[in-house]
Length: 247
Figure (tube, rainbow, N blue to C red):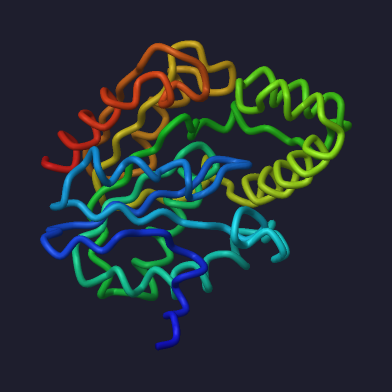
């Protein structure tokens, strides 16, 4: 049997008892494998589905997509297989912007999509926090990335791995910059904005700015840690996510 077209875009283990699905979007430079342990932690009633963007892991040979308007049509088409159950969105950094645009796009063109919540992780919705990476040379850009805690030292020190990481991150930051979240119209679903108290790129005010990105309730929660606080607080993040989804 031929694999469905969504196979390239989605990693998931079908949960026959699932009552809803959690669609997870990656951070810049990240991939679907970041979410591989979440299914076991959330249990069989929530099916975890992780987006795999082109240019990484099994899609390494595919060209990157650097504009949100080019990304949304194939991405939403691939995810449309998931619309039979209520869908919760989880976006990490870059992924939060993609998730917000995903919800808006579906609201206009896929009325059968039952999107019921959005969790924005390590993402600022404030215009003052927008970054233009195209003005940075490679050394400046890598220094910024290392400051976020997002690149292992052994990768940065290896010329070959560094070049691959730089290409992926540059492309993902271009994609992020094509999403003007600060000017985006609000969605009509509840939002949970979570972040780290020592994240140099997302101040508390940036999390609070998510209140203007929804016409429904917006909740905020801060955890100890930097931009990648989820790695150090995963059980607590999962508990907060589970509580939010149950609202």
